[in-house]
Image (tube, rainbow, N blue to C red; front, side, top):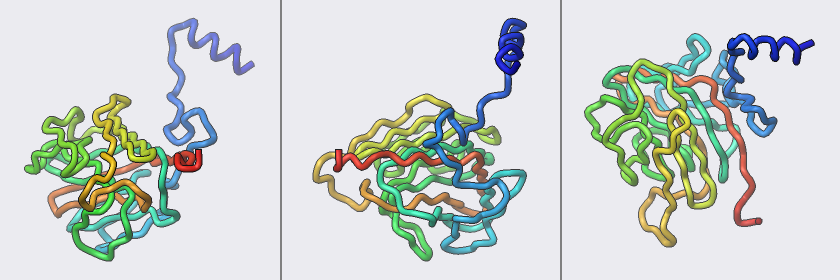
Amino acid sequence: MTQLLLASLFSLGLHTTATPLTSDNTEEWKSIFDGKTLQGWKANEQPDNWTVENGAISGHGSRSHLYYVTEELDNFELKSDVMINKGGNSGIYVHIAFHEEGWFFDGHEVQINNTHRDPVKTGSLWAVVKLFDSPVQDDEWFRVHIKVEGQNIVVRLNNKVVIDYTEPVGAAGPRRLSKGYLALQQHDPGSRVRFRNIALKKLPDTASE
């Protein structure tokens, strides 16, 4: 009966509802945000600056970073719908340690910034690979897809690859791919960022293949 109904809809040129981000047609993806609470997440400072509103994690107010503390990750893929206000600044951190406060520079930050004064725009690997034009807009939902595998990180915005970076062997500096936590950034009082439909897929350890 269901197959007949779907066939009828397509024959009429109608479209069914899109598959939710968290399923992605595979059981390997899992939701890491329940849409209602911050269970599994922990802010390093100013915890009141993170709330859940209309099914999204909302960051507002002064500097704070919200960690997914359930587990540290090595190889993985992450997908999230993101929205930021005009002039706002945020980011998604990968492979970082838990820091009680401050700015930090381990791991990598995928920049979320369309019109903030910082010239490094959305999709950049902050301080490593810089994009100076944002392909997405303020106050609109867009999809961020990050894949970390070995020393390679690929960033997609709305399914388009904007960064494909492999760390050079023996690269110096603190920003390195290894293993660590995910974290979301609330940058400053003028910024307001939202994250929803946050899904994670763990990948095999490349060293063991």
